[in-house]
Each structure stands twice: as structure tokens, then as C-alpha cells.
Image (tube, rainbow, N blue to C red; front, side, top):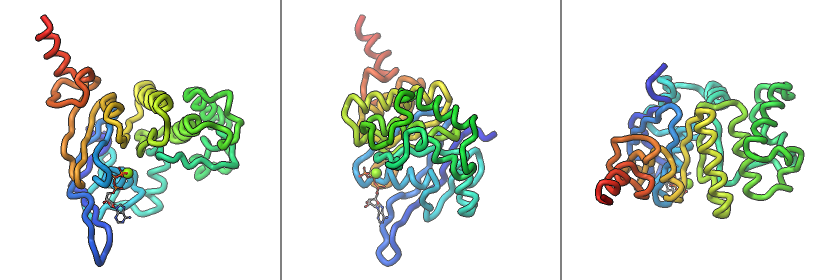
Length: 257
Ligand SMILES: Nc1ncnc2c1ncn2[C@@H]1O[C@H](COP(=O)(O)OP(=O)(O)OP(=O)(O)O)[C@@H](O)[C@H]1O
Ligand SMILES: [Mg+2]
């Protein structure tokens, strides 16, 4: 097994042919197993582009993506579709639930590729996931009969149905009120801790980002800063919110006396 879950080498993305816009300028990134990483940065800095390329939903113009040491840029479309289905979960800002289907049916959608009708094991797993996200009682509700926060929780359960090693989330709380935002983020954190799922979450919210293990700040298609928060490690050189930061906690403690 490779020492990192995900690595990128010099990822470049150029949009357009006649008029070319370079939006990723050679991104090098290592993601550890079970890490919870936030990506922040101004609008247009390339966060979604990077996430889509990491999720193989879009192609890089050049560079490599290694997942458990295997180069994804060498796979064909069929292999990539299978790879995504087995290894990745996706959560988007707008949940993309199917309105005519119940919460339970929506959670099972990613299994359709493999199974025409769900096995009883998958049904049990879907119900269990809906219980984890606090929606067991609502599993037979149509998705349109759920609140925004509840729909996003269904989308979280859906992203986990195939037990992915990595979940990629693009502003999963961008469309929610403050209370639902906190609940959804806590939920992602709990899943990360309990199931060992790795998360890469794009967010505009610095406060939320500071609750991750690690924060990557993008500016103009480059990684500008990459640092660990208190929950993760020791070799911290900068942090977003002092109360979440080991370095500052130590510093405050030593000056308090
Ligand atoms: N399909 C496309 N064709 C051309 N340019 C694009 C395309 N998609 C994105 N871009 C450009 O790439 C740059 C990065 O966009 P991206 O969506 O990755 O930014 P972002 O950091 O996710 O921004 P936001 O916070 O607003 O979601 C932007 O300048 C955008 O205009
Ligand atoms: Mg974006």
C-alpha cells in the first residue's frame, strides 16, 4: 500500500483552445489516509477545478494523480467510472437528489451501476446511513418533502453507500443556514472519525475550515498555504483561529502564568 491515499504531481489545468486560461499552475498535493482536509480560497482561485480533477470528473491538462500509488491519468473512461464508483463519494453544494424518489431510494442511487435492484445488505446499509445522518424516520419521504439541511444529509448518506475511501465535497454547506451548516460539518467530522473516511472539503467558511485536520489555501490556481490545525499535529506554523491551534494554545498557556 502506498504511504499516501492521494498524491498529485504538477497538476495543470488550462481551459479553452483559442483563448487559453490557465487555472491550475502545477499543484502538488499529498493527502493522508483518514485525513480531513479543507480547501479555502477566493472565488475563482481554482478550488472546484482542483476538486473535480481529483475526483476524475474533469481531466487535467498535464500532471499526475496517484490514488494509493496508482496513476489515474492513465485510466480510460470505463476504468475511471468503475474507480469512482468503488473509491469515491461526492457531495455538492446543491445536493442533486432525484425529486421523485424517496430519501432511501436516493441513498441507493450509486449502487444502480452495479445492481439493478438493491440487495438486502445494501438496503440495510442505506437505512443504517440514514440513521447515522439522523433521518431514519424520514427514509420514505420524497426528497422534495425534506428541508434543505435534511436533503443535504441524504446526499451525505448517498456519498457513503459504497464505503468510499475518499469523499470530495464542494461547499456542502454553502446553501444552508448556520445551524444546519454546523450540524452537517459535525456529521462529516463524525463519519471521518468513526468510519476512517478521508474528506476533502471546499468551503468559503474559515471557521469551519479551522475545524479540519488541515487547511489548504488556494490563490490564483496555486496552493498558497498548507497547514495543520490543532486536531492534527505538532509541526504547525500558522493557524486560522487561535483556539484551534496547538501552537497558540501552548503559547497562550506559557504566557498566562
Ligand atoms: N469550463 C470552464 N471554462 C473556462 N474557464 C473556466 C471553466 N470553469 C472554470 N473556469 C475558470 O477557472 C477559474 C477557477 O474556477 P473554479 O470554479 O475552480 O473556482 P473556485 O475557486 O471554485 O471559485 P468559487 O469559490 O466561486 O466556487 C475561474 O477563473 C473560472 O472562471
Ligand atoms: Mg467553486
